[in-house]
Length: 266
Image (cartoon, rainbow, N blue to C red):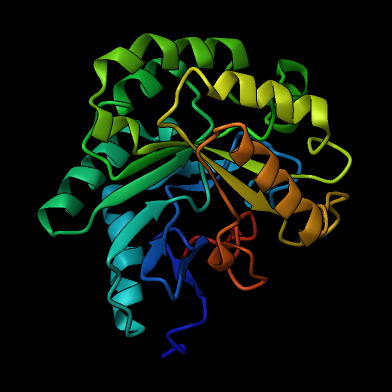
């Protein structure tokens, strides 16, 4: 069994011979995959380098939870933040959220918000949190960093339309992920544009992330002191912003590092 303060990344073999990766964080969170591959194509992420093969079933998502248990882990919560776009597999993901809740395991998910019609549905599901991976304050940069994600302006319009319908507790379970990329999205203008958008949604949490090394990727995050300065600047404007989660900034199972391995059919 892995030491409790370390990440434990492990492969899970599927019936067709493919393998997806999951990771147990020492904080008690189990991160699992919802697809074999990913169609979004974010250039800084290794998880979609092989493209999308297929969706995972509820049973295959549960298989990842069972494998964590066999490795000696007892997760307190689950996040669908591994390989795949959860909204591209909506029926299985929604059922997995419901079934896990009956087992006392709260489930959160990370999504690009595409397609928007499904995002509107998922905003109201009994999940433990929905994180929007946006990584930009402007439409042009968002299109570059999340090439097959939701339309940026329409996504914010969806949030604005549904915001009054959500309870304050539900609003607090929504957040924006912003992966800081040196020389790309860490400039004052981009961050200021993002801050102005976030002021409309005061309970929305902004999660700053930093890069994990990905083979052949030209991206890197700013140094720690620059990240701290960005955090202080945004917090000073009243933005509900959090520093990078240390469990997600690891070579072993950090964000964007989980891989699909194609296998021959047995």
